[in-house]
Length: 402
Ligand SMILES: Cc1cc2nc3c(=O)[nH]c(=O)nc-3n(C[C@H](O)[C@H](O)[C@H](O)COP(=O)(O)OP(=O)(O)OC[C@H]3O[C@@H](n4cnc5c(N)ncnc54)[C@H](O)[C@@H]3O)c2cc1C
Image 1: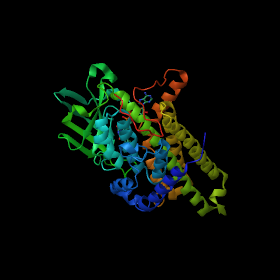
Image 2: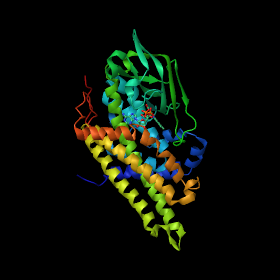
Image 3: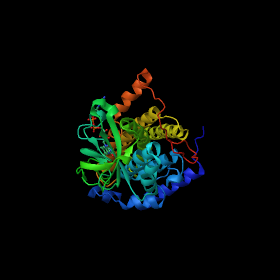
Image 4: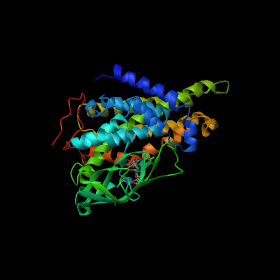
C-alpha cells in the first residue's frame, strides 16, 4: 500500500490543473450560460496526450496506469463536469472497452485514432424506455449479408453531436433477453445516422448531450464488438470503467466546493467574525474534507485493482455511489456557505450544485448502486472473472486474444 502519487502522476496532476485554471476556468461560466460545448478543449486535451492516458502506447495512448486516468478526471472536474464527462465517455466507456473487447483490426482502426485524440468516441446505451433497465432497450440489429442493419433511438448520449465513433447496443435476438444484446461500433458518417442535442438541462450545460437516431444504418459485420449476444456483458464491463472516471471526477467536484467555500469563509464576516469561525459552517467544511478523502481512497482502491487486472465491479460501484453523493452534498453545502450569493452565478457554486446532480443519475443511479452493494453483502451477487479483462498495468505488449 502506497498512498503517495508517483512523480509521473504528480506531473500529470499539475499539467491538468494548470490547463483547467488557464483554459477552462476563465471561460466556463460563459460556456455554461450559453449552453456551449467548446469542442476545441478536446483538441487541447489531445495536444496534452490526455485523450488516451491509460491506453497502451502500442495503441496510441500514453501508457500510464489507471489511477492516472482518475487524476486527470479529478482535475478536469475541479473545473467543470462537462469536460470530465467527455473524457469519461471517450476514454472510460469507449476506448477502454475497445481495449478490453476489440479484436486487433478494431483496435487498429478505431482505438488508435481515439487514443491519439484524432477521433472522439462515445457510448450509446440509454434509450427513451431503457435506462437502469438496460434489457428493455428496443434498438435492433438484423444481419443481412455482410452487414447488420441497425434501427432505433438512443437518448441522453454525451457527445452526441461531437463524437465520430459510437458504441451502440442493440438486440440481435430479442428472444434471448439480455443475452440477445450485441455491441457495435457505429460511425457518424454511416448513412441513416443522425443526432440532436437536448436543450434545457439542469446542469452540465457546457456539455453536449442528446439523442441518436438510427434509421436502417448499415454497419459492416466486422464492427460487431465481441460475439453476438455479448453486448450486455460488454456494456456492464464498460460501466466499470466509466463509473471509475465519474467517481474520480466527483472528487474534483468536492475539491472545487472546498476551495471556493474556504475562500468565502475567510472573506465573509457575520457577527463580527469570519463565517469560518462559526462551528456550524465548519461542520459543512469538515464534511466536504471527509467526503473528499474517503472518496479518493475508494477511487484509488478501484484503480489499483484495475492495475492488477482484477475484476472491480463491486469496488467501482461503491466508489461511484459514495463519491457522487458526497459531491452532491458538498455542492449543496457550498451554496449554503455562500448564503444568498451562492444562489446566483456571481459565484461558481450554483453551477457546481447543478452539475453535481447528473453524476448521481448517470452510470447507475444512486438507487442502483445502493441495491448492488446490498446484494453483494447479502451474497445475492458476486463477480466472476470475465472472458476478457482489461490488461494489467504496467503494460507488456498486449497480445491479441483469439
Ligand atoms: C447528463 C447525462 C449524460 C448521460 N450520458 C449518457 C451516455 O453518454 N450514454 C448513455 O448510454 N447514457 C447516458 N445517460 C443516461 C443515464 O445513464 C441514465 O439516465 C441512467 O442510466 C438512468 O436511467 P433513466 O434516466 O432512464 O432512469 P430510470 O431507469 O427510469 O430510473 C428512474 C428512477 O427509478 C429508480 N429505479 C429504477 N430502477 C430501480 C430499481 N431496480 N431499484 C430502485 N430504484 C430504481 C432510479 O434510481 C431513478 O430514481 C446520461 C444521462 C445524463 C443525465
